[in-house]
Image (cartoon, rainbow, N blue to C red; front, side, top):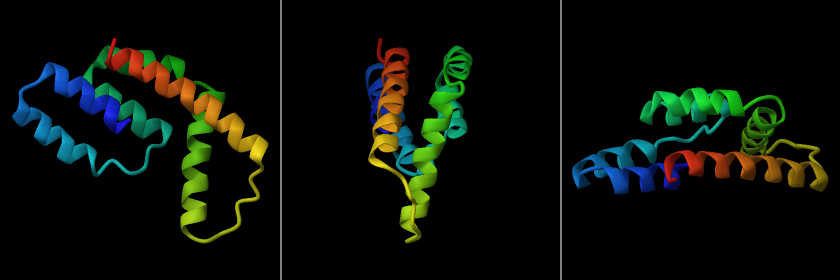
Amino acid sequence: MIEISLEHVRTHSDPSVLRHVDGRLRRFTSANAQNIIDLVGSFNPDWRVDLEGFLVDEYKDAINSVVNLRHTVAHGRYTGVTMVSVQDYYARVKTVVDHISNLCIP
């Protein structure tokens, strides 16, 4: 998310704007579905609408599950996640990242 956003700013903004956005994005840590929508929507309201329509059910669940797993592991708790679940999350999250990339860097 951060690199896609920075690439958009890099190609459309002054270097001072890039430095500001880079500093703000480096503090973007909890990439759950709503935070991603908020971030993308802060660049362009049409992108927010597009992403809200795209991030339904399985895509939103996959993103939020990965974030929850990250928090669980970071706190040293058992996740019980299977390799099949991780592969499924990966495929869905990759689809979302590709979609966002197409919005920000056409």
